[in-house]
Amino acid sequence: QVQLVESGGGLVQAGGSLRLSCSASGGTFSSIFMGWFRQDPGKEREFVAAINWRGSTYYADSVKGRFTVSRDNAKNTVFLQMNSLKPEDTAGYYCAARLRSSNKFDYWGQGTQVTVAS
Image (tube, rainbow, N blue to C red; front, side, top):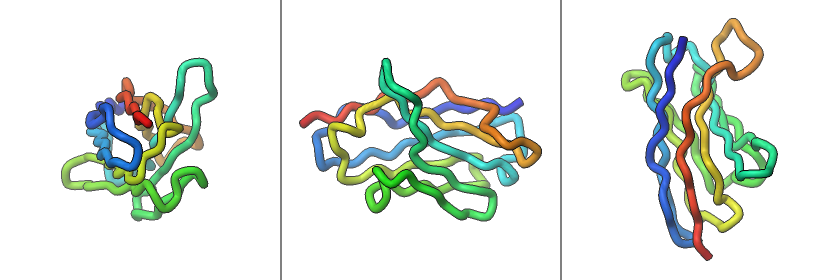
């Protein structure tokens, strides 16, 4: 069982930056594939970024060049640095964990709200 807790959301002006953190417990963090997703009420959940155990990163086209995902295995934490934020980035942001033995994200955090004002 993996527990995930996000933090760092908030209200920011368009063009601003935020850094989200996701702290994990209950698993071997260095072996866990970590992802970030976002969802607005009434919309489908959307993949944002992910990072595997080797540090390889993956991004949605909509955030490439603006968002950076990273991890600190010593602190069991994954980060999402969000720069040049746009109003359309407004959503609840969720971190998720996928174990090596799985082909899907099995564990989810409670989410943190990001609101970008125009």
